[in-house]
Length: 217
Ligand SMILES: [Zn+2]
Image (cartoon, rainbow, N blue to C red):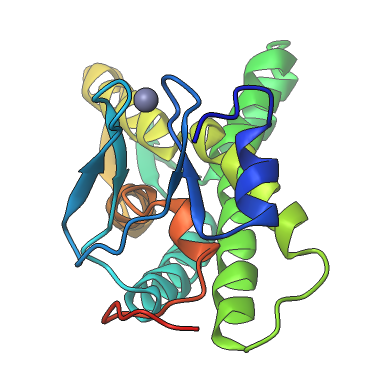
């Protein structure tokens, strides 16, 4: 079956039994896969779909854990700096406002969006769609939440921030006593959790078969 003029999301939303090849737009019947298995497109040979090793319950647990770690990462200091007997605590909020006040408002806005707003929105949407999936009937705005999730995923850049902080800490050690604090470890754990969440195929949330896969209807 080949339907080249249909938006993949539209096709999958209308018929969860379908899966669209992202490379050649061929529409296939969604294969029943075991966790960790993958299916290739029969038209172009590209990877069509890989079923995550994580099931939805594991995803929900990861999402809740990530939200808790997110709060910790933002509430706790990331680093402390001591220079001339003055100790300064660096949190994400203080770093963003310092960047804003130094006249690099664009950097401050990008950091606030990619490290705070987008990850928070992403985790909230994950929580929403995963909890919606646990109920038998999907809410009317499920498709909207899934669209939002798909759009947000590439824009959550906690790992870029983490690398930036680590580089700054190393560079600043010559100027001040810089010590990593709990917030930095929390951002590290958050990066790992967000990476684990990103391995999950969003299209698995469209299908209403729960693992173990078995034919229904
Ligand atoms: Zn293909």
